[in-house]
Length: 385
Image 1 (cartoon, rainbow, N blue to C red):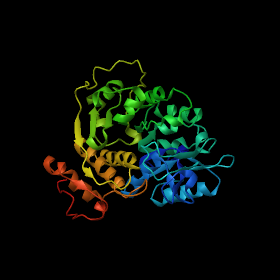
Image 2 (image 1 turned 45 degrees about the vertical axis):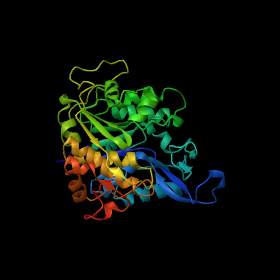
Image 3 (image 1 turned 90 degrees about the horizontal axis):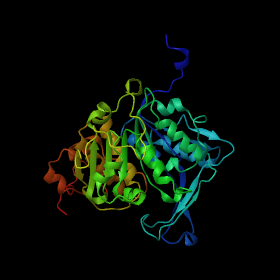
Image 4 (image 1 turned 135 degrees about the horizontal axis):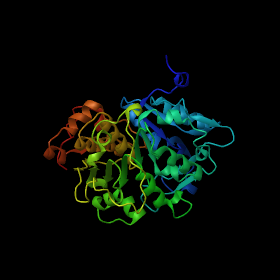
């Protein structure tokens, strides 16, 4: 007989994401926000982007959050759900609104780019361990989080500390650093991100944001030095590629498919900034793999980091080798880079597997442009740039 306390336990899914997703207003034309006459509505959220893309690729995925009891909340839930994501655990807040933001059409990396956030006091910024469904959050083979959520409020930071704390049956915790200096109200952001990342099992961090947050300029090896604990550390190096570090003693939580929560082992203890590198961790000169990024004809630069994480997680769930996990990350990122908007349909599994299996020379000449995901026989895929 099923124990009464488990009769309503959430189904275990491949990946669960918790975050604040917002309604995004995209400009109808380039220019300053003051000059744009109209906007098109979309959605934005790093973690929900990841589960939307994973669900579109056939993985079971769940999004957990809080939204306002308003039309924008309806739009978020309905849109994310339309990708096949389980949204049954999203709760409504009758006292707080759904967050929204406006942005210009320019590249986010330029000084001309403007973003206007209206998220202070939002429903999601008030998330706590007491007002989200922790059972649903933890009922995943992977729990995907990011540093953006930690910056929203003290309550959200406490929730992330709870979710990354060691406990029996904890799912594999995936953490994307996502350093956003403008979201932090004080200078503690880098220290908090370091703390949370060192409690995770799988960490994604950009080489550029590691330099911005912690002043690291020694390449991926310098990043590994301050993140010795995670079983898998992925350092994204922009158009050059990505490096992955593997801690040998992490066992199946690092080298194989992510375990189901019921069989997961106890994760490593949380680290501190002054914690020495364990003897079992790979040294700074011992990356497990480096994979160059393919040449991509970029249509839009938004959403690529989230797509990379989704591709890497998909390959991890399938137990693929580390090289292929990185290649799938690059391919899914290329799908986002060659498509306008934050969300792009990933390549089919067969298509991605075929490209990920290319020999090194063929991979090195791979070039991907707009529309490459729509055909299995794209004749331009492997042309030399």
